[in-house]
Image 1 (tube, rainbow, N blue to C red):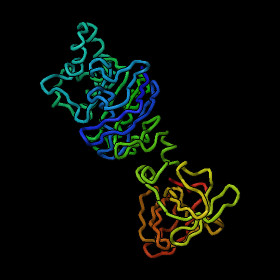
Image 2 (cartoon, rainbow, N blue to C red; image 1 turned 30 degrees about the vertical axis):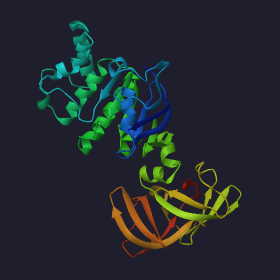
Image 3 (spheres, rainbow, N blue to C red; image 1 turned 90 degrees about the horizontal axis):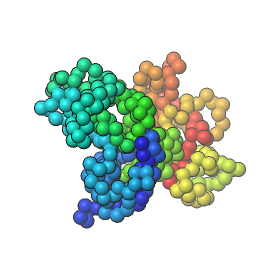
Image 4 (tube, rainbow, N blue to C red; image 1 turned 90 degrees about the vertical axis):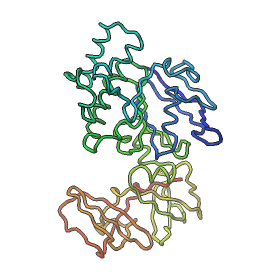
Amino acid sequence: MSSVTLDHVHKRFGQAKGVEDVHIHIESGEFFTFLGPSGCGKTTTLRMIAGFYYPTEGHIRFGSQEVTSLPPHKRNTGMVFQNYALFPHMTVFENIAFGLQVRKVNKTDAKERVERIMKLVRLEGYGERRIDQLSGGQQQRVALARALVIEPQILLLDEPLSNLDAKLREETRFEIKRLQLELGITTIYVTHDQAEAMSMSDRIMVMQGGEVQQIGTPHEIYHRPVNRFVASFIGETNLWEGTVTGFDGDEVLVRTASGQMLSGFKKNASPRAQLSVGEKVTMSIRPESVLESTGNEGQNVVTGSVVMSEFTGACVNYVTEVGTESLRSMSINLGRPIKQRGDAIGLHIPKESIYFAG
């Protein structure tokens, strides 16, 4: 297995910017995800690692080896494409063995390796089937087996679950992570799906407009977003604007745009947040942290009118109008009566749940 380093990599297509100054180091054996909306530069970055694109500026290294200008077939990477790119005229066995044939591996060794990888991805007994006789999930596993059978240093996956239905996506997501942990292979995964990124990754790189917005663990990305884009893109959040009015020890006092007074901790602030008296600040408040008030909390209690209530079985979700602000909350169903549209409600926003985004 190998680490991957992108050293201030840029990619331009004529005058159009593809990727701007990507500087990352991916550890050997790490599951690292490029996450962002369509057109953000994540697939372009992956294709530079694979060798399908060459950087306009910067360097790419696998371990200590410079690979910036190496063609794809000399990089020892395995890639799974969004559309799987399987050969319909070949059997499952032939599809998986194709890369070994290109590398002129002898037939006996190739057969052993294909059978071993088919067992690993749970495709025993499917070797003679045609591709059109397989389900979408089985085709995805064939594509994964074909990438792994060549024993690559690095596994690259470009939106591999996007063609699957919701239930199959969840099952296959688990299988990919199981294989990655079992093999210990360095894996770089591209997706626009936040749930995939959060559940599978050791670390995530969030991209927008060809630029890196934040790199961190799923916990860091979710609870400590560096800016408004990351806070809103990763899961659901309430973004409230306010003005810093003062400090009380390690707490920051903020008046919201609708006149609510809230208190949060200085430590829960992005490095980009300007925490000075009179400065505007954006607060990120996750819905699951907002609690229905018992009347005994003291600070950070707001009152409003329920705009919408949603019962999901395990949870009750509310959208509440608080002055000129909208506040989404999510609470575990404890069997209490559910408030309806127009009902008054008191909500407690714990200090530790307020994050000051940049």
